[in-house]
Length: 319
Image (cartoon, helix red, strand yellow):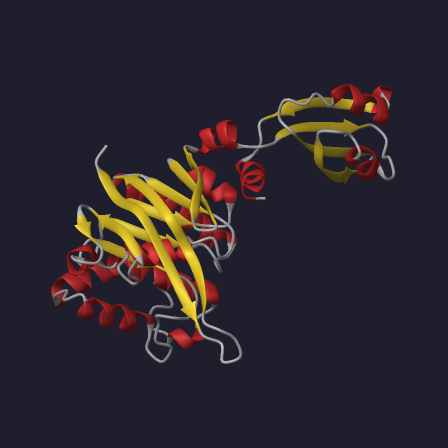
């Protein structure tokens, strides 16, 4: 497949100077290698401070790498930044990047002018994207009157304004109500059908699992796992899952099972008269005989292993 985004041995070091201490350096990216095919949703997952946003800022030309090379559609993100910007759209969150005293449509017209869109093209495109993001009834209100979710919808409209080939979405559903988040998730596959490529960051694992063709997990500036969602769950996960349902509730069941060799974590949910347990187990360790002994096999309604969810696999990788 043709490559849309390529990062080769990228490092990014930030320096800070505290008057009371010596100059400190923080390495946000540490030899990052990343290759993203064209025409897919690629999710970059990781904890806060792992390097996700730094990566997006580099490939969107907002930040230069300390070393290494990044390119978008074959254009160097440093030497050919202008050509890269013609191909991309950036969707961020929060209040930054919007003008509160202007209306939603005035914001979009301003950004259209910055992108040298002619008046006729702007009018047509605005109608399309305003309807697409669900802001038709509020687009003439000042943005300072918008809720957080409405501002996020306007950010999405801004990112789609130039009909870019590559979209960078940095936590695009943050602040959206459930309906708004659902509408965005339904929009993303339609954008892929139009031939776009999307680099997505999110903390919602179910969202990444449902939308992504490929995933990379970044931690401390390095890629620690990469593949399809299924490959992440099967090949990179460092945990197996055992589900147990008890007929009668047991007190202190978590403490009892945590002492079993191979069990790393126990989650307990009481559901009426039943008690549901989720055991995180070291792969290859058979804990079932000891679990049956401790819990009393006669009290066990159900016991079976299953594959980890993407969230469970992710937590086992970045711990």
